[in-house]
Image 1: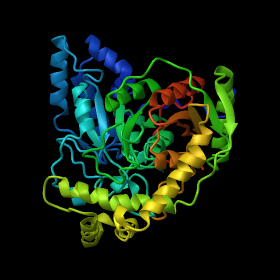
Image 2: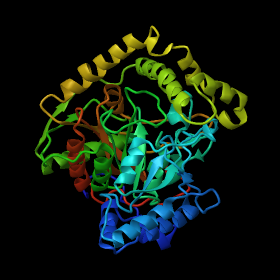
Image 3: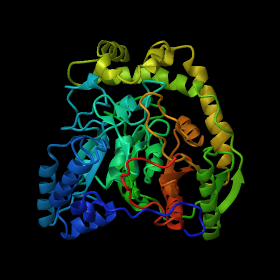
Image 4: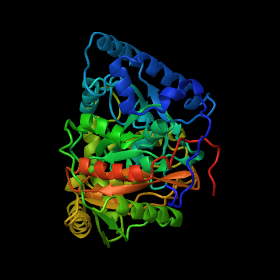
Length: 494
């Protein structure tokens, strides 16, 4: 990518050389080695656990903070997968592969706390998406830290911080954000602690950590991946989805999560959203340079479109808070075990335990949510109608007329984490219309700016996940090698 104005990809020494040969192999390559019998799942799992002890745990050398909990059954499951391989049996495309899941996704043996001590002691069930992973042969390795309650609790929250897991660091620069709210999922894969991760997105929570951590990620169409037994915010916007270090790896995991296979290869037509910019000049310039190369390599880049910029967010937030009251309360009432049964209970719990739950910021959004009246309240219906009119009618449908994929820059470089002032985000409006409409959005790395990864956003119509990943693969080819491995540096530049 010599003619694109980005930093050179770093080639730093690995902090745990003993595991590096496995840590940086892609999921597809690892799966092939496992299937051939050249690699044992138990060796892979034990290597990653040793790596996490050095890189992730607070007592380790780096203290990344990406994992929430190690699955105590991981080694036993890996041994079972190895025995099946020796017997000539395979459960599916993830046979023996370790996968980590965000800690708002329930799985037997893992906490599923959503970063809150209010859920300690509540038993976890296997969410349907976890059942799909296990059926495909995956080893659930660990759960990952997140922005507490998926970043819906406070208007001044810090992405990647939770009361139960502390603050997740970015592997490229440890004083920088790993993004929210699937921060631990992004950091874990970027740090070589797992080849694959599952996050969740309501608005930006997969795309953001993927962009900031130099990964490929996709939020599928709402409903394409089951969200049952996942701690919710909004039924109209929540969607679990995969993160990985390559398009091929994300395809592998998406196929299992959705239970679908890609259609015959096609060449999607692309449009560029010229009015969607991050406001970070170097990121936007890099996006333009990559698009210019892409247009040369793939003449299906059809046109540039002016898409309306981000509108006042009160309508989206009003909808999210109203759905939160209903959806989180219903979830808490139905989860096994004693404890909080509603959003009001959560607020009361946090008020009673401020030294744990409100050390750095409060829960003003929870309090506001309780005043909405939920979906039956007077504000919800009109706000939802305006949301959809803007997202679908003004943005997505006109922009995607006669094309399949809309391109824009996603986020600027990772900002410095600040538990006092909260996040200072440079981002394009791309995630918002896709979130409101429930349509899919993906991200793929563009390269490095000031030593930090930045990514492109790709949007499409419902069910267009495979076309988005096809286009993401084209960008991946154009920028091949431009991101590289993280250096785990103490601080970023600027």
